[in-house]
Length: 236
Image (tube, rainbow, N blue to C red):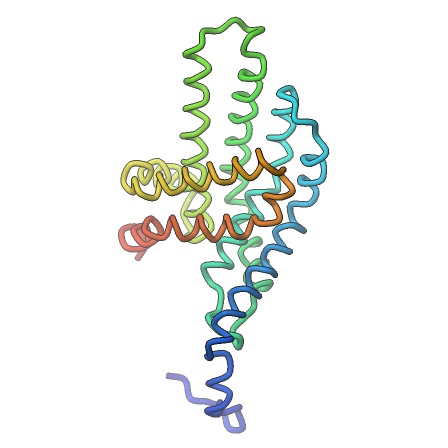
């Protein structure tokens, strides 16, 4: 252990106790969630504003998908910050952790997020012109299934990229592998997606954005077994 330099601050019993009481255990996570939600809103605002302004018309589905471009880097940074947040009031640096995660993960996340959005835009275009194209009903159902599976895969990939340093091709493989390996995680992620869809259906995308950090926290909690398995089996 590295010795402290002469004159360095020696923590007293009072300072050690500060931030460890019952009130601190309640206020620390609330503070972190509030700060992270503000940062999440700020970094997704360029997409959120036009998305909320769009009419809920099927023809706008591809445009809505395009507006989601800034979402993944912001969500990745939020997951990183939540994973590394302090446990008491003396260790709270949520903003610093958010920006560190944003810088570390943005490029890696976008390498997967952009192709995913392209696939979603193509599926949305097909579904919105379903009748005009005259394709059979089973094809519509197949597209919906593909979209759901692709989104569940993307959630796995997003979490793995946010918490670990793997090559994009390895993230692709691991995200697909864990769809079947950790079925409880897959079902839990599906529940998070359904809850988010219900919020948007009843309220709007703006309502979902106001509580986005809670969905990120739920995603991190649901994916904890997968994250632990990745760390155990695929990291040194």
